Length: 301
Image (cartoon, rainbow, N blue to C red):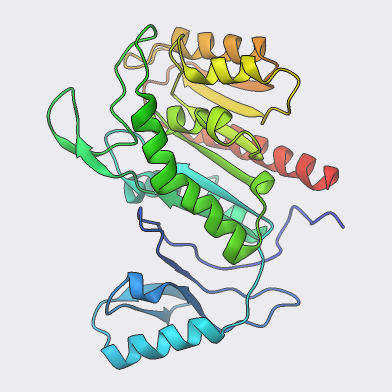
């Protein structure tokens, strides 16, 4: 049976740190669940309280209450999701900042749309490391040299995948019954670049999106695609501002062409008068693509 693309469930998905700790409340047909907090021990002395129909974190909880929550989480009914979308932030922000950008648009609420359709939006945080360019400590997926002809740090990329993204995918499978082909991963800037690496590291994903990002011409993604000719390719959505001064749109167009040369289906949105930032039209286009991608996934099941 193909799930409806409109209004199946209502819950609140919280921003996720690299440790993958989050809480959620879910009410859905065929599922009996009062409250759920996975790995409460990850969030010491924390509980989920209901206030004005939303869930908030309260840091003044006693150890006894935490113990009770842990017991409740172990006995709570399990439930399944129809999919999951991971959002990877850019180089000069964290998961919380990236989520706030999506919350700022008055005419489109992508995270809520996903929630309404039983698809979990998860905002992942990269690990803190020293930026090789300016020496500052930031949440970075890896230290990426700036330039279309620069060499990738495969080790840094693979570590970020192994420590953050792969555990997220596994958790979706183990705790929410979401198979990998119903997981979409994407991001902005460096987060979008990391998402494109999934074409090499996790090619069985449902889809990948990259906003204001690119792959260098020598990327290992192209080598992997070339070595797996004829294999299934995850569809890709890319969007870029035409006057972007930080990541030239020519770099993104080069990525689009090279991916298409390896039989990857790429939808590309070019935004005039948009620099290196996210805008509402871009998010609307991304929303349309995510809906269409899930429809194709459901119909193929």
